[in-house]
Image (cartoon, rainbow, N blue to C red; front, side):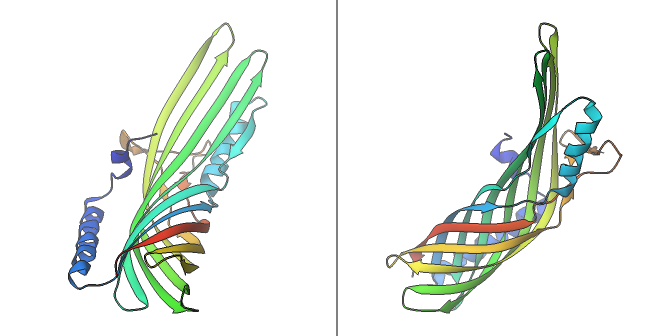
Length: 248
């Protein structure tokens, strides 16, 4: 896994946008607005059509009975958001999320082992807007829209071991930058005056990006057929979490 610094290696323009958003949040304290922090764990599906095609092509490329053990399945994700109220029923803020999935091709028999591992991870940062609709004193429905930037990292490692003869290994790191939008709906239930239970579901649309070698931007990951491979985190999102009211 790459370092946290690596995951936050984003363009200068995006870093400036983050500073502006953080300043806006901090400024909210001065106006006595509602300030909330939320922690979520979720589950999502990921389209990843290009990398799945790449995985299938590599099965054929190797030339012997290699199997796809894992093909970028749905997996857990984690997110954090901070927001403040611009009215009694509206909030704006920033959000961070971590996504991961992966693929593996493998073949093991009496003579040796072949393995191709392709773990893929992403860090998302963006803005969000929530509009609440009161159902009862403790229960609220809301609609939400998130959008922002995606930093994706792919670690590709391939090994072939012939027992009693030796082992050959190759490893490459690739990264990409893209954009996302995620509309969702959810429910909040006030457990206490300052803590709420939050459940939501939605769909993330991902612009996707080419995978470029981390050591040389001119080197793009391509399938055996010559096509550039793109990331694509588009898919269903479900999440459950807790929201803490810092100021009311």
